[in-house]
Image 1 (tube, rainbow, N blue to C red):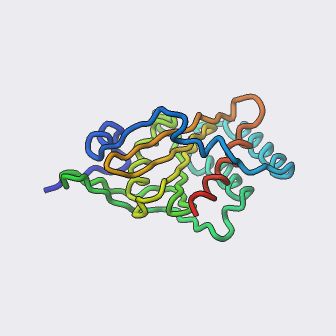
Image 2: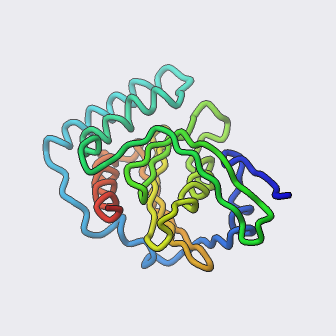
Length: 208
């Protein structure tokens, strides 16, 4: 009988051991978040400045929960980037299963996320947890990305955790490989949402 692990409880160690998942440190593996980024218009920058200001107003009164983050940051970001328009297909929840090669372990779960394309996933971390960080969601979103049936194409993802954002690239194979971008922080000088939106638009083009 297969061991069943809920996706929300899976660890990076389990993914690496059971599914031959490997972290790639080379910068050449994930160049998509750095190169050929679409230009962000002045109008988009003005709106992103308001989103950033709204975030700092919101965090004055914790606890900062998942739904307010989504409403104040992720939803406006997707609207400004025109991800609610065709050809994007947003799905608020996705149920998936992946089985290890020896069929000894099954990972199953339903992720509260947004699927922009079958090749591009966006996840909001529930920040009321003590492990409020990008790391809290990395294994979870990788598990869902690995369940993507279109394994011949690279798969991309983004995690939003409070004022932090990181992008992920996964390439499936006999040994599956993944890498992450730098972490974008709203606390940084300027407005890191400019870069986040540019990368979102770039990766969505590649995911078509």
